[in-house]
Image 1: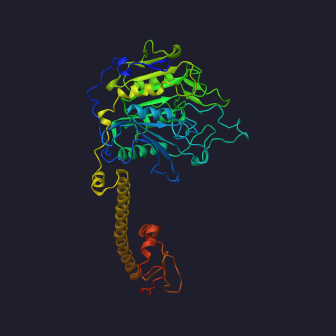
Image 2: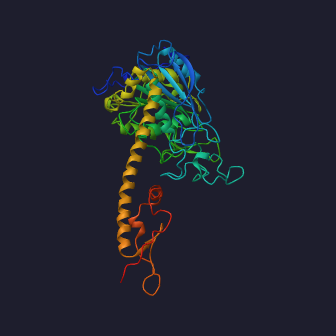
Image 3: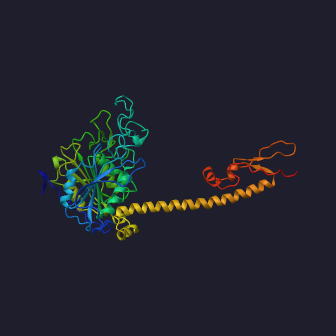
Length: 475
């Protein structure tokens, strides 16, 4: 079998000769959307339920295979576009999934006031451990000089001119999308994969290192994307399978280090270009995290595209693998064999048993009885949880208010016995013998509730808003 004129590699796990470990389940793990699928086979565009505090809406394109019946768990691929892209960026991948029996969901990132993008891999955290993530941190090459040309509105004030994506929480967006899909579509939760191109590929490293998403994917397949220099984090929850593709002639995110001693690849497509981690430094870090042997081995002929080919790290833990492919003659784009390679990668990896999703939430059972879609049931449950929390907080406030009111009444009684007049803000001593006034030095803040609660309780306090004057006590 060939990818056009490109040779098709054997299944990657078989090339490395590694059997699955017993801790990895090969049986499908149905998501709670199985039996309740709200979608028909084919492509559809939907607006995500999740929105950040800014209120920005985002959409995703969902492609279900031809034979999807809503009952049979199918693999899922989340595909993340490049900078300034959108959900339409990889039609070939969607068509490939439809034909070969896996679900594809392609979301659009937050655009703010500029272009859709993904926040991760150091795109909004310059300077980092290895300094600025670009060659022009002062913005001297922008027009006018000194401006921070790609500072998104959600970032507020960018620390330097190297920031170039949204500062919205893209990981939260991806996690919410995954929850939505697991509830609405019949997914094999043990075969959820993430892929992306350019900025979308760089974002995968954030997904793999963030505790909210690190354990939810069976594997990661970045295409022409590496984390910025100083942000080469390993996967948080190994074993984590990795299949990375870089273009040999890519000048935007080059695979090779400009200086072999520091492992930093430099964007030469622009004079003030960005600094990235070299491909070999990326895969070495993932191999170390997965317990692989440190030296990668060529995967052999005829799987050597353009004379460069792929290398793999052997004897990794938990049936995982780490593969690095440098596409001979390729630039900053996905190679024509990317979808077939992804399919073989998916067929030989499942999520580690310890990372499988929790049991079906109880509200999905209620949804089945009440006729709600699983996603709508999740929203109802979220709202109900918020209402219960607010009611509990209100009840606790009432209890505290009554307790503080009793304490104030006791204080008033004590002050009254001493002949002190008490006003709404601070207690004063009334005129004593000789008609002089003196201020009572009382720790008002220490005995009264903070301002917000005091205002709530004053509505029913008989002394709120005016002084309660009592006659002076006799000397």
